[in-house]
Image (cartoon, rainbow, N blue to C red):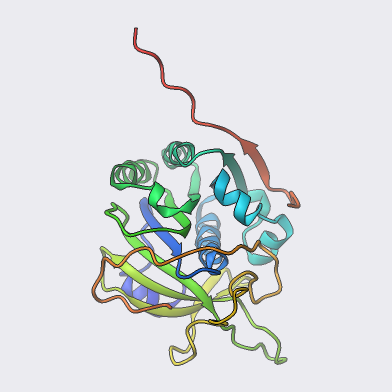
Length: 270
């Protein structure tokens, strides 16, 4: 369960484990919101079952930069629980994610792409089967992407949302505006939630609040509202409209184990 009652209710009790889920930035400037949402999901999974493998393809890493260890610690995902794998091409990221999902010891496997269109129906089916075999949470996060068939259980669009003030009148916990555009376990819809890094859970925010913060600002979404630097980048566009019920949503190592790997060559036929 995420901890946000409205979202958990729509998901039939929470985000399905041993399954594939896709998240993309809702608009240009929103990749940080999508990444923040996925980091929260990964933190929840890590608290339940160990380590997280984060696979990032070269174009995404070049645009958004590397994950920041101290920021991750403050966000609620301890850097010691995270293994980062940098690859050159989307096909390498897909292979690494599939292999990671087959590993029972991983709580979650995240693959970060510049363009979500790199994950076609065949690839998503393979990833779904791997997640079912390994039992972990499969999370694809895209800075931008286009609609297309997918075997994912859920698809989300994530955008920046205004944080509620804390008790001193300052910026409160980071918030995100979500559109659930595909949900095989229940209805779709739009939600505004916030991340509580101390409790390690999401919480609902008042649906009457403005969904997207800084709509006219190109810098919107480049920094989380809690003062914890994770990374920032432009990019993003709507990525799935497969559910009629959906609403509009609008490096410091720090203990992060980093590695570089490419997909091994296929054996040649004799």
